[in-house]
Length: 394
Ligand code: FEO
Image 1 (spheres, helix red, strand yellow):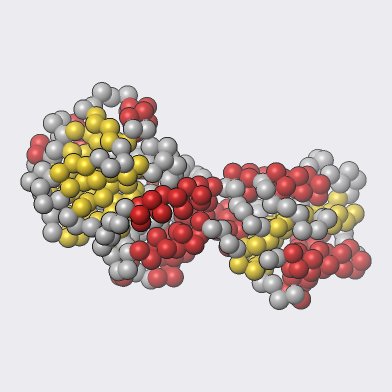
Image 2 (spheres, helix red, strand yellow):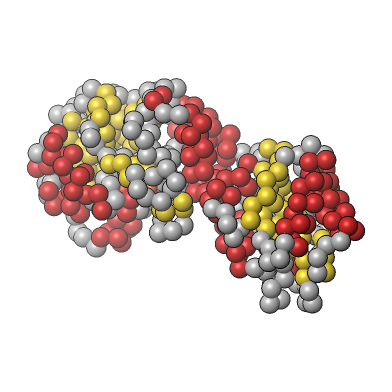
């Protein structure tokens, strides 16, 4: 389905209702996604970004329903990740006369994926390509979220096409932010930021300040996933500025796993201590929870409390992925604590503490390690840990 966005500008992307795991199995997509591609039909014709190759047939059909591909002058590839460049080869084959516009880093990443000698033209921030009434202007955005990432601005239409930035994995029957459920939209936008962009937060702030300083009018923001920001488009830019500061809410998240409920009883007691101090919390059993949803909750929370029983001198392996993410996503402004039960060796709590410290999350309080099942004294120690974590929350 094609959607006219403004005079001479169209959405020609595809909706992927069925996808439930993205980046292989790294990111859960409960609400599907879209791969957004844009067509500018001025005196010159440009396509900005393509779609993931399993959808290339529908995408090419969209292109052909609008224009003979042989008339396309420019194909802009803002970013090499295959969800946007996967149909580039098919489009170049149909439009062999078109120049392929990439960022300077894209000159490495696009051929690095496709090993083709297409007619590339590398652009840098400030470069422009006039199309007629409209002009494409480029802003390199390295590490938002790959080194090659680039924004394309359609001047004459005040349309910003920032590729992955401001996106959401969110398939809907509609195209624009004012047509969908706001709560769902922000849930997906926050999950996207928390799981993908958090480690690049300082660069997000810098890039947004740079773009705002350019004084560009922005009437619409068309990211490469999800809905297009048409109503009050800068709302998501301001949200990104806020999220990039990583100022968490006064709430806590308890991540744990358990074999015979000893560690989970400790988790509940920690929760009681938090609640006593008025701090809302959520407990996630990491064997049963969606990692990306948990990480979104971690993003919001000022405290991360992690628990595991001791297994083979270490942790239950269900905790390992989220600990890896805590490190990789570089969450800031949080405090942490550890807890767990053990039978004989008891290295688990110290191990978790090292992981938290290694992730840049300082310990609010020494961890609680309980032998076998916690008795009332052990549970009291957990309640006290909860209270102290609550007090440490800024
Ligand atoms: Fe970085 Fe949507 O790909």
